[in-house]
Length: 490
Image (tube, rainbow, N blue to C red; front, side):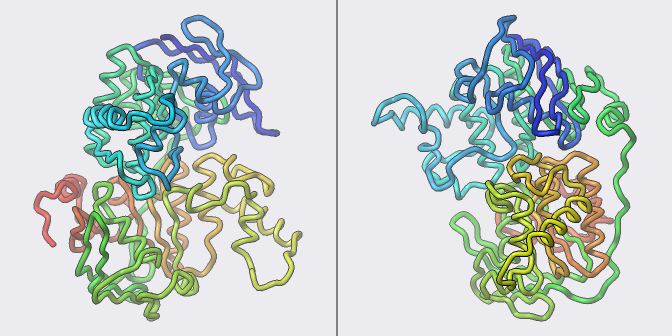
């Protein structure tokens, strides 16, 4: 099945998100789509998968012009898309999420569906319990579930938008093996990513987007510098390591213990200095998210745990006490936990502003929103709804919403879905916070990022937590060994 996109145009108000895009993808091809955040990559893929319609242009399958009205219409034609943010129903079981909207009457054969899903999951090396509730899954596990669902529903053209975010290195390796096999069987795989190393490793071809335009195409073997220049119009370099030199403790953790149905974390002791950056590494679901949420007051601790922030004992205190002490949490799932769909940027800044006033000063709120949009380079307007923003701009908005001063910033996968330029920008903003004494603790599946930006690193494995390691004295191989459980000492 050949795919052709001809002269596609899409406008969102004054923004020309796709500007005369033409692209042909042949059967058996893994097509990379790469570009900076807001370049138009996801918009084009949403058009192909039926989530939105183009204002101008044509879509052809095997030389026949087609019209795709909806995602279900696209799936009937064999086109399925995995989005950056999972599209599922968290309060329901995995099996029920799979059966929603499917044929089978009032009493579908759940046993057969579960067997089919298990067979597909085994091919990917994914561990999916069809009786588990989706709200108990990690972001990475929910992405895995969506991949399985699309294949199960018969997708022959598989679109993956930043699919490796939140999954472990071994799961990524298995995913790449599976995508390569699917392409060898004649499927089309469209792989949207900002990670050039993934494009170079996996994709037969790459189309580079910038500012809504298709600015170039390349085939293997790639030249990284050329791709970077096409993406950003200039070479890019990571910022320098800041380094922490403070002796003041911002956070003191003693005998931290967390009980979870799947993991038990215990006896963790850690002092975090003012301005220090600590990276948390480990396979998805190894305990680092539980640890981070406990530090943010979002998860109760047990046992003899004692947690102090700026000298204030927050052990067993409510979430509001953490906020008052200057603790901020930035979740990985921006639209489910971080932002509120249906509200504009201005309304978000009103909610995080001075809530003691009886009436809202609309003029002051508008001014504050414009200042934040400019300061954080958000590609949007005060009246833009947050769900209309690209993933990178949603992340910028989340950071802009953080109040000052802060004692501790906790981040889940802060560069999830961000291109290189946005990642560098994000860390420049975080380092500005560090210079004022704010400590940063973050989770990332990008080991290079953890090594480059952290002062110290903690590795998690099956609920066990390593002793803190100096990032400057650690390398990727050492981290990889610990993440896999080899030579793990607690």
